[in-house]
Structure formats: C-alpha cells, structure tokens
Length: 189
Image 1 (spheres, rainbow, N blue to C red):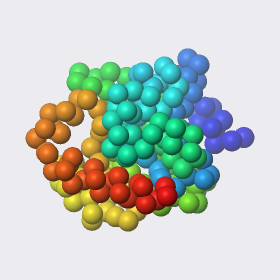
Image 2: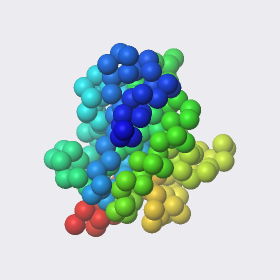
Image 3: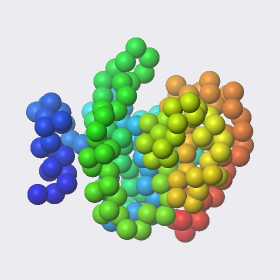
Image 4: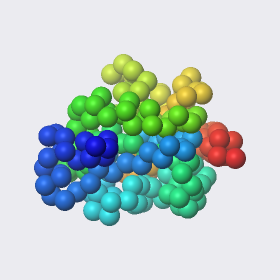
C-alpha cells in the first residue's frame, strides 16, 4: 500500500474519503524545493490541484517561477499541514487539523532526498518546523528569515487576505522576496 492509500484510508480522513475527496500534496522524488503551507483552500480542494487559486498565483510570482515549473518540472514539492480543506471559520479558514504533520510529513519528506530548501508558509508551518515560542510573531519570524537558512525560508501566506500586512511591511517585498527569488533560481538552475 502506498502512503497516498494510507492517507486515504486513515480514520482521521474518513469523512473526506467518503466524500470522494483526495489528499492534496505532491512529493516528486526529484524535488529540490519543498513548500509547506497551511491547508488547501476550498477552491483547491474542489479542483484537486494544489495552489490553484489567487494565493498560488501570488506564490509563484514571489518564487519567480512559472506555472509550468511549479507543476511540471518535478523540482517543486508541496506538503500542507493538512491535506484537506478544514472548513470556514469566522474570519478565513479553520486551522489545519492536529496530528497530520506528525503522522505523515517525515515519511513523505524521506521520499525526496534532494530537497535543498523548505519554504515555510504561514504560522502553522513555521511554528511546527522552527519550534517557535507562542509569543514569536510571524512578522518577526519572516523579518529574521536569514536565521533559518540554509534549510528553511519562512514567508507570510500569499493570500489576498494579507494585503494589509503587505502594505504595512514594505520590507517584505523590497528585501525578502528578492532574496527568496535569488535562492530559488540558484537551486533550480
């Protein structure tokens, strides 16, 4: 049985499997860049294609790569903190379900021996992988991205919901995005 089948048959994912939904992730053995984000959006869950929304368009722009490179090069892997859309909350989506990363991430990452950079998108991925204290803000984490290199590169979520944050934190577009694009280009070339 493959890991994909195990995820489908996991009791924790039963409701999604019975609804005919599949886990959203991509782990090509040839990948050199791994993107770990929150969870698929409703639009992504419905289409079955990861980062197939406005957030994905902005993410590819931030990475400085085309859709073709993102989806077809075999160099980009994506593992969310939850493989399924977690549902609506009062503002935005619910958080990823607990226990998913602990159960599956290590096994999925082991299938990709050539990962040179892991891009951590948002607080859930950053807290899990960087073992950040609760009081550490995403702004402080992203501002200090160099402290986590060469293995990890933390960024904010590319959601349009973060437009206000982006306007308040111009340093992100001026310094962080160019550094990210340079690192990605170096790895892909």
